[in-house]
Image (cartoon, rainbow, N blue to C red; front, side, top):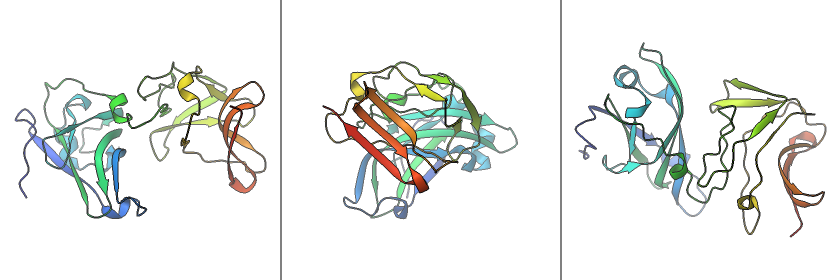
Length: 232
């Protein structure tokens, strides 16, 4: 099926397929404005041989023309037909009724950088920390001030991008408090974690005002997850 071409300034494109089986089978069958992760090491050699840099990477919808917001957190071209990187884009619609198609364009050396993290995470996100830099930048719309880490170790090699290792006693990351983090209704807290100790309660995320008011996400004995909310 012939699709429109985004622009003649881009000489190459590769189709991206998200299988219907990878989309939740729970109702509804369609998910809107969903941030999609691309492990760039999975892209073919034809991409790495022609891409001019992260600035010329454009993601479009399945029509081949409609440009979608994207965020590139890392990009390494090995110049041997391989490379690596972390890329997110906002899919306007995903469905489990059929496969979902998108395009990644590349090969325009004159393209300007168009990284737009807030537009990728505009679907109700109030805080997004990839932990990919020492500033702990918030990629969400209206981002909070950068965070500061204490007694932590930053490293690469996780399932998605970089990771931070905590010692379980004195290490933490603190970000400036903001009213946007207040719970005023239904909310979702999520994190990628790999506990090495499950014999006691370990906090993953916490926002507290005083000793009681606030909320926490933590792991307990045997890896059980706990979510706690108290106060007004």
